[in-house]
Each structure stands twice: as structure tokens, then as C-alpha cells.
Length: 387
Ligand SMILES: *Cc1c(COP(=O)(O)O)cnc(C)c1O
Image 1 (cartoon, helix red, strand yellow):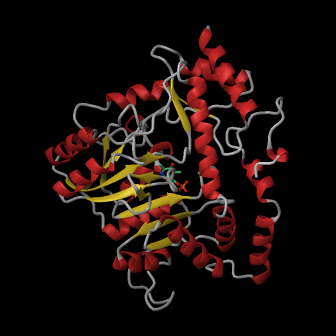
Image 2 (tube, rainbow, N blue to C red):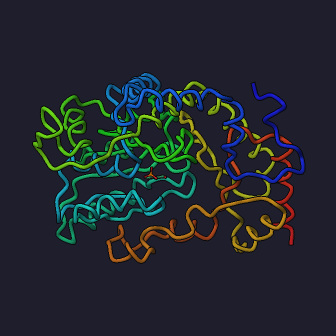
Image 3 (cartoon, rainbow, N blue to C red):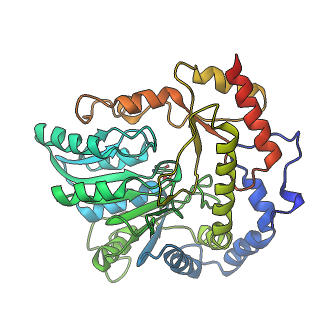
């Protein structure tokens, strides 16, 4: 594979994430899979849903997979299983997408924001300990941690798990960006008490709309999740034994995902080749991401840090003028967002999140980024930083 047809011409517009290239590679397979569903008509919980759940479980080694409507609902369902209550606190990183903290607030519980490490962008275990102290000082009951594997790299699970055990906390892994990665021989999906992921189109494994999943070992938790996904159903849909929601994955999306899963390992390899080449090209220009020994990343984003004092927005504007799309993930950490700024932060503040917000710049990253295009991107970044 990658054949000439999917490589971009040297003057073609550069895509931030090129879903079109993947579509060309998969050819008519996805269209045929969608048509099969349209023809058999089982749009809700058709046979493709259970097939995809089995395939996803086999892919990562999780015992159970419950597909659902999106990655946010996956987190919400996980918290329902945990029985999160008002007055309880959940430790979450501030340097993440809003959904990670949003779901805690759904339950009138309190997200306590924790700082991240500047080298991995993931939860800082020391700040996690400080956050637990903060929660207790505020009269809250810390019950759990939602870790995030930012940009596709698993968090520091040895320390996070030992903190969780020491304080009797559960651990939900928000793997919306990291499905397919591994931590010291353990696949994402088998690390915390529950793992959630997202199939939003731009995630490493994305569908053609919204989708998500929960990966879980525990049989009882899985049985409850199945019920919660369909309005808390008991023996059938019209027998309601608990308060649930409507969070099913569409059959069409399951069919799309099964096709994409067949090339996912190959795409992860391609992402890693792109990342390795970015490192060669940019190591001396910016601070490039480093993967700790024993971990793998699926490179949901390739996020560099600009040298101290550089105006990120100016650099991004110059890149844009040169035809290179970029993004600032995340220009505003959650503890600074208007919806979240009244929630507590660990210790005396989150200095690393505050600084990263000004330094980070995510470059185009996808499995079909060819070398010429990468050279153009690196050249444009060098030029933007020169003056
Ligand atoms: C994308 C994302 C989510 C939410 O997923 P949706 O499918 O868009 O609801 C949650 N957490 C993180 C870290 C994400 O990147």
C-alpha cells in the first residue's frame, strides 16, 4: 500500500488531518458496508454493532466492549456505573478537551483540576496528590480520577494507579485520543477500571459521524453499562430498572468502523513513521514530543512547543499564510474556561498548564502525510521562527 494515487502533489493544499486519503485507500469497501446496512434496515443495534464490539475487544485485549454514541457519553456512562454523587470530587487534568471535566459536572460533582507534565502533557502524579489534599481541605470526598492520554500517549499509569490504590479511588482512562497505544506492554483499554474512547471522525480510529466505546474487565459493570445505554432497561426496553440514557452507536457507524479497523495497525505504524521524521526535521527548531521508554503513541496530534518567548499566534498566522494549517491544542486550559473557572485547582495553581497554553502548536498529522509535504511543513515552521 500507500500507492501513488493517495500521495499529495507537491503544491496541493495541505490537510491538517487528511480523511480523504484514507477514503481513497479503502476504496468502495466502506460504501458497500454502509449500503449493506441501508438494505437490511436494522439501523439501531443491527448485527454490525456486536461484530464491531467483538473486533475492538480482540484488537486491544479488553474483556468487554460496549459501543456507544460518542466519547462524552462513554465517560458519562462510566460515571453512572460508579454512582458519582453531588459533593464528591473527581481529579482531572486541566490540559484536555472539555468533555473530560464536563461529565463530572453533569452529576453535580466537582472536577478538581490537576496540572500536567511539560514533557508528556499528561497528568502530573505530584499534582494529583496535591489535588486530593485540596479536595479534602474543601470538604469534598475524592472518589476517582479521570486520566487522559493526551495526543495519543498513555499517561504515567504506574504512579497514577498507585495513588488511586493508596487513596481508594477508581480510575477511568479517557482514551479518546489514544486507542491503539500501549503502556509498558499493556494495551490502552486494559489499564484502568474502565476505559472510554471516541470515534469522532478526526480521532485516530474515527467513524463517519459520532461514536464511542467503553472497555471494561468487570462483568457486573458491563451488564449495568448495557442497561444504561438503553434507558436503564431490564429484561426488555419497556422494563426500566434504573435511570439510563439513549447512547447507542448507529449500525452504520459500526459497519464503517469494522472496515477502518482492518487497516488501523498499518495506519498506526504510518503515524509513527511521520512522527519520527518530524522529530528529525524539527528537533533543533522546537521542543518535539518525546515518548517515554516502554510506551507507544498513536499520535492523535503532533504537538510541539515553541521556544520561550515566541508568539504562537504569530507563528501560526505565518504558517497559515504559507498554506500550512495548525491548531493550538489547548490554548485555554479548562481551569481558565468561563464554564469551569470556579472549580478548584490542585495546590496553588497549575503553572505548567498555564505555560503550555502559550507554547503548544499542533502540526498536520495523519497516516498519509508524505515526505514532500512534511518537508514543506518543516520548512515553513523554520521560516516562521527565523524572523
Ligand atoms: C474527543 C474527546 C472526547 C469526547 O469525544 P466525543 O466523541 O467528541 O464526545 C473526550 N475526551 C477527550 C480527551 C477527547 O479528545
